Length: 113
Image (cartoon, rainbow, N blue to C red; front, side, top):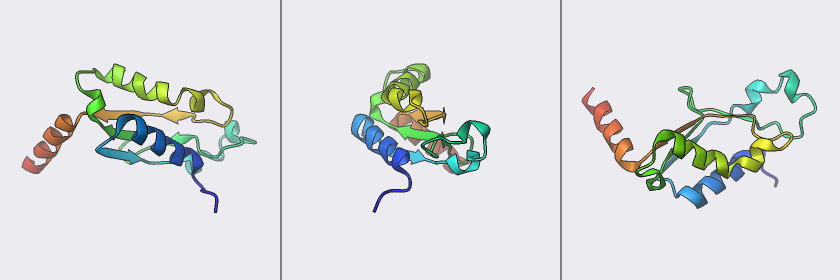
């Protein structure tokens, strides 16, 4: 049976293969944008990826150690260069990238609150 989310599946596979994330959250909100004029006649209905708090894709990976956010984001955008440039490909992709240490500190702060 064919997947109903082939782009999300592809994204998950690529991110997992390249970054070996300890955390990966993808929220596919493409269905909320299907009525947009730009989507009429589009070959793919998966174009918008969002996580509930305005973050589209959250990746925690040691691959991001010693890199600033812009460099981390360039790494991920480079991974999806083809999908973002093709007709019917990814239209909106926002990222939250963290190292395992940053994620741990975030969890500790949340536990103290």
